[in-house]
Length: 68
Image (cartoon, rainbow, N blue to C red):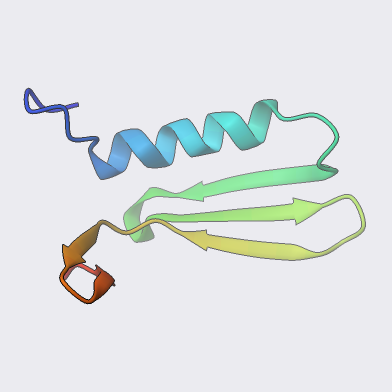
């Protein structure tokens, strides 16, 4: 984390991976991290596959938007 207490994207993605990897009762069969694309792929025990994209969001007056 930076000195100004903002969480960095890589740290957040790594912690999210750890939380999913250590979770019990969610039925996760496999978990893959594609760091180049900031993508987590989750395969469940019943065969479903989910993709989680991690991006930094920027605060705007009209709500949250994805930062470029």
